View 1 (cartoon, one colour):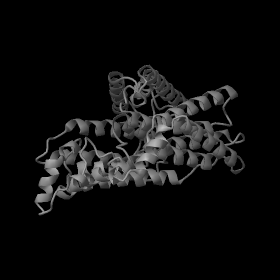
View 2: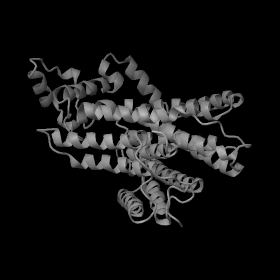
View 3: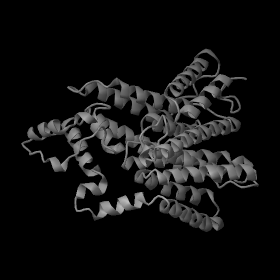
View 4: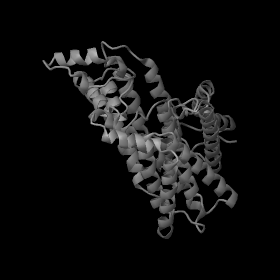
Length: 417
């Protein structure tokens, strides 16, 4: 197979394609496998670019390349400058891993056939991990133990499932005119199963990203005459799923009725204050990637004391992370990290602003653009909406999000920035 990314039909060699498929399959399943396959994909891609006529994917484009450079630079500088806090190079390594992954994909040109087999591998791996997590949950009888093996905590697993479920819905809608009845039914069942698990997982942050994400997909990809019944059906299905898992509703209502204000947001406001104090004390560097846990009660009290202010324990909460992408980034990477995140959001949103024409049976060549747009939108809504309530851009979430962004940016014509 010729390896020339300038020619749309010749992006990945067989080994590259297998490494990419394997990595996405094992991403929610096994740590060692996904890490080794990520490394194999990166080395194969760069080796091909360096030692063949394939090249590195074209000239520099600000809108395609700069977001990845800024994310990595901000994390590295924060790690170097966050004195007297320890240099947490492991967190910088995580940023390097997901930014490089997205960057390589953004400088690639995956054919339609390759894209479909990659998405199949991603979906099957997620379903295997979901069934495995569901089985463990049923054996233990503890809902909060439902998780994808390699993703971890139930809230993080719900966010990962949300991204894949939205991508599955987008794939179903974008390719509807081209799919056989059997494939449609299979994708529909997979989507419904993941939706049920998201609701059963009792993660409000995931649901608050999932619902508007699904609505946007339907509004963009479904013709006007079919939207009403689809939105109604989806709403009824979600209501039924929530009714089958009443704990989520009961938990929310009990918190709203609780006179203790901080429980209404599960201490999100108090964690945000902790993050803001870290930023105020170290605006240019933060306290270093992965160091949010160091902003404990004693440290925050010392910061306040330097400004002759009193530490009130009830106003702050201390944890391993801020449970918010935004406050966690500002606390750990300072203003440069916040600026890099903002630039990423703007570039991503700018690419999504150009919505594709709705696919139809008469124009099969238009199917790729809606599919890639749907995947990119799924990644965006999970990172930046679920990011309001959790740290949604790291490890497995970061890799999956950069997969979505890389595909989206790769569609940008070479003469655009």
